[in-house]
Length: 228
Length: 228
Image (cartoon, rainbow over the protein chains, first blue to last red):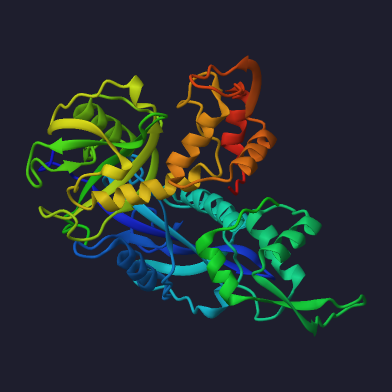
């Protein structure tokens, strides 16, 4: 079997973006080449012979969307025969969660367009990329239950409701807000400041919060156990 | 890059075995071919052109060790250039936890020997297989903290201490036994029977336990949150 194997290896990236205003989104490219020409797809492509998987996914992201993200995590390898109409291609997928505002996306090699799509408004996608996004979203949902999240996504100081919003957007469901706050406070990766929230309407302004970086990164390694 | 890619795709399996007497072990084969001829390694091999990744890992396990295990989970894809001295090979790895007694292992194609090795006594291994085992063990350790485990590994009725032993063997550390029992009882996937343990020495025999299958499989899907 050694000499006759005819399988190609690709990497694909599911880059989730989060903003308080837009919620959860996914970075997609419009394909400039066949198959699925003009169809939307995840950024990705074939791995170079001497390139690590991580370098390959970085390079493809850079080439197709113009952005660099150096903290993607491996998600899963999709290898079903027939998933690519050209030949057998196994895709090793990566995912990450970023703040879209800090990236200037622009289409480049193999991509006619690049855009963020709200997770609820994903267009029909090339290949099995829809299943890949579903798997990545599932992984992200469980990840935020055992690792603190938000440090790179929220402002330096923010009302507690912003963290609730983030969790609800990622989990795509309501949370028990009272219980949520109790647990977050207990974990200790968030600190209440004495600074007050600026409210646009009426109501009593709450204090702003900030991350305790040391505790945050310690818990990121160590893991939390979170039932919301 | 499409036409010139020269990368092979393999699958490798980390099959963990557990017995109350021997603790945690790993199934290894002695390689019958170069490179690392006569070296110990994980069972595995190249993926067939029209074969799913799951079928490939089943086939390799069957061919090299004589056993069939149909509930392996994908672990991670290892793709560092140079991990195989022959050419670039990316290995998509799988892992599982079984009761070794129910399998009759025997070496076959490409394997000179096959044996279970206690996790503390793993010999030097071919390729990067040691890192793969470490990654699989880490995954298993976190898995048993969010999914019930033991149904396929323990007797139908067992003293509670057998479940403690299993957790301690997989986690490779002591556990807070009092807290552990409290949590397990709360999860509800274990039922206390009125049958008594048969003790060989002195002491007051405790009741035997059995799994509540319905609850067990429900929690396996739903997940538990376990701090030990």
